[in-house]
Image 1 (cartoon, one colour):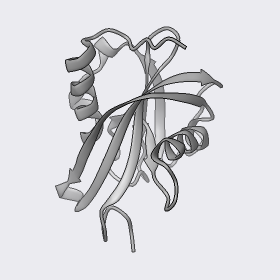
Image 2 (cartoon, one colour):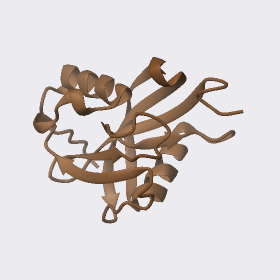
Image 3 (cartoon, helix red, strand yellow):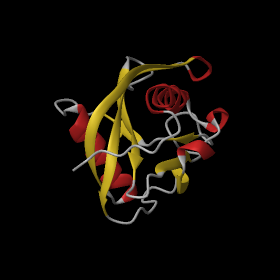
Amino acid sequence: MRKGIDFIGVGVGAMIFNNEGKVFLAKRGKQARNEAGKWDFPGGGVEFGERCEQALKREIKEEFGIEIRVTELLEVVDHIIENEKQHWVSPSYLARHIGGTPVINEPEKCESIKWVDISEINPETLTITSRFDFEEYIQKYGCNPYIQES
């Protein structure tokens, strides 16, 4: 049984901001679970018995070697990928980068990473969930970088 295919999967992601107000993007690799070649605000699958925020921190540490602080829930997205016959429910968070230098630890799943100004993002290049997150963020905050006091 495969989550997202044989039953609805739960995946988490985050718009991760650094101290300069730039947001972290990852380009999905050829062996990504879905939407290969698209940019996203990274995250991953929630395991049985794991809280969503714990899963997010674990996935970001495993995939990119960085520590994050989750600051707020941005939204919950119905991530339905009709052409790939997948269905996910995806809580999306805002987070702060608090340690480490990002690296690609799973090159088969991720082909590129970068920090960008929110105003530089082209929503057409994003995964479905990340596009929803981007639009929700712009509606709430405009093109301003997310700054959360410690």
